[in-house]
Length: 146
Image (cartoon, rainbow, N blue to C red; front, side):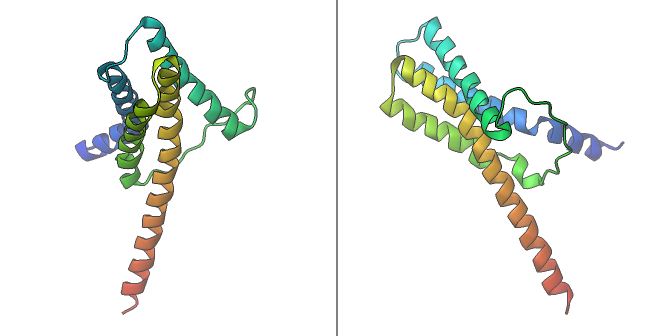
């Protein structure tokens, strides 16, 4: 395996985790630096919100919580790995939420947002990247006919 193959393998495996880490860290940083009174219970409320966001996503995706799933090999379009929309968009929404919510409710809602919105925006990025891939294939066919 050459260096470029190793790099491709590594960033493909780490792509979603890095975007989610940036999102959770930055959303939490907004709470820590936003002038809110920070307590250990509020931090736990933020984490509870993030876990609840996963709960919502799992329930929406599987329609039940006790389901056996088979892992699938998903294809990944390179441009969707950047997470420009998912990471930055979710953190921006967290910022907006800090303007309207505070206290335990604010910490919970921003925690939910960090998980739920990030994953929904990942779907949008995936759809957009698939659309770009489709456009590219159409352009190749259009210009290769000459």
